Image (cartoon, rainbow, N blue to C red):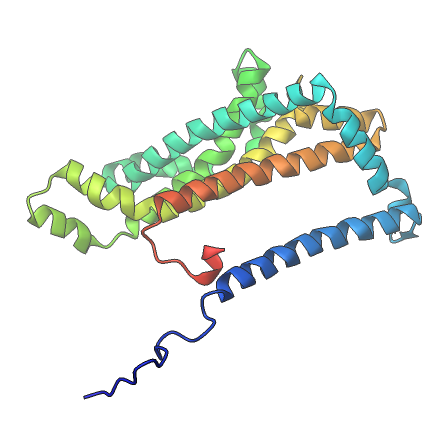
Length: 282
């Protein structure tokens, strides 16, 4: 028998183990903020000193100029109209791609006939960059808005499809056999095995698809848009308004970060049953 000493702290729980995680999380966030602040400070020093050594920082605006322009642009209706237009395009195209990509990925992963009929077509079209289809979209759709949404859809569709298909094929057959042994049908297999089992892979594809969508929607706006953050950024470049160019770049970065973080947060909420490491918990 094991002797228990009254009043002694439990040996399995080290003293001070509780606050370590919040402290390490605060340290991680502090390091992240410091890295961003260091990069901004270095940019200010290089541009204010007109450094010209291999890279020509003397042609770029300083942080002060960019910040002043950003504050001015935030007070205009045009800035928010462009931002809303880009968000509508990205959310529409990405939403359609998410629905179609997941459905097609499950179909290709579950049906051998669909994999033989549709699979070769997707593999032929998948290597083509979505931005290369801009001329086709202009000819195919009567309105430029529809063409930009189509480019956004195409950019996100294939990463989501591929990740979903791989996730379906990676599911252990034992899970499906267990459900069928208990009398479950096709719907029970899909709802109790396939859908929950592929969620981590699906959200991996959604995260990649969101990033690629932003690249393509901004490029499409620069080429054929009339409104949007990408269109306004390219217009500023043609007018040599370089602080406005960097305001557009910052806006695109913030929008991309926010939408990708939203996808990741949704994925964490829907897959909270998965075991988490300390890094994921942060």
